[in-house]
Amino acid sequence: MITLIISQKAVFEIIEQRREVVACSKGCDGQIKTAPAPLHVLPKIKATEEFLSFLVVSKLEDRQPLYHLEKQLHDRYGMDCSRQTMACWLIDLMFPLRPIYNLLKDSVIDYDIASCDATTFQVLKEPGRPAETKSYAYCIRGGETNKEVVLYEYNDKLHKQFVKDWFEGFNGYLHVDGDNFFELVGEFTNLVNCNAHARRKFEPIAQGTKGKGLAKEALRYFKELYKIEREAKDKQLTPDQRYALRQEKSKPLTEKFKKWLDEMYPTTLPQSLLGKAMNYCLKLWTGLARFLDDGRLEIDNNLTEQQIKPFVIARKNFLFASSVNGADALCMHMSFIRTAKLHGYDPYHYYVKLLPWNMKRDYASVV
Image 1: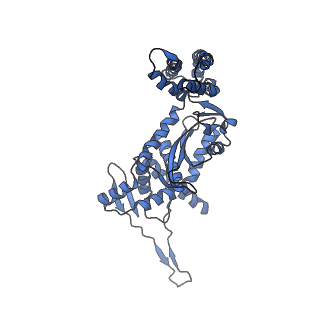
Image 2: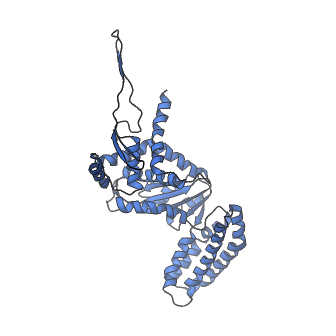
Image 3: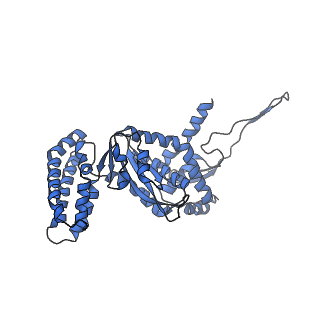
């Protein structure tokens, strides 16, 4: 059994397992009995949970491509473990861990506030699709306070239906950007659109404009709104207190901004950058102003974008997934890592504790 113990310094060990064999002294039928093998999350492999945890964290948290790990293990420890074998182990781990992922998803569906965002993700061997076709990895945040989770899920097509199906049973507020992927889920949720996305529409226009200009005026409204959000954060206001502050200060400001947009939009060229920026705000106005309805809501979807970033950085190193199973496995492992880190847990030690879970469950069901 191969193990790699991570403390202050990695230690490579080979563990020898000896199983007791007993026989009946009277020569009975079926007289030889061998002790059962120790339970293992992947029973047919010769690697410990510590090594598998090291593999997952190295791949997704430390962003080490498998060919780097293959070389590192060989050069430092004299260990021959091919990248193909390691890739198979990452995928095989997905199946015993699926029930835990499903429980985390339940915590999102059962709460009334969630958020969703997506980034492109290339999978080489998708059935019926060219290798260069872009798919998506979705990042979903949710769960009640102090029990929040971060989940990732791969999807290749029919994105509107995918998002609708994923959130089936969810009832509440969903933070999103203005992408049309979220149109169908908006039929049964209250979409909370991202003001940061709306603000970004005006920024390049304002930067290229001398003098005041309409784009700079729009940014002034956003600046004042975010100043109020900063006040709530600095004062560490409760949701109820933040709601009251927004009703006092943010609501009149948003109403003034909406009136300004209604007056100024007809004076712009609809296909100009400024016209498109204003139209974006008007089209999504209900969702952009919805953060006023509940003090637990955010003014934007930046917290979810922050959880997308680690996936994007990791993707720059592994570039793509070879197969659909590989894409699913990467998303699942990233879900556990980011959720662990969200709650202050070291992802390696978290995985060491996590992996025996399925073995204990199966063992309990047969004793």
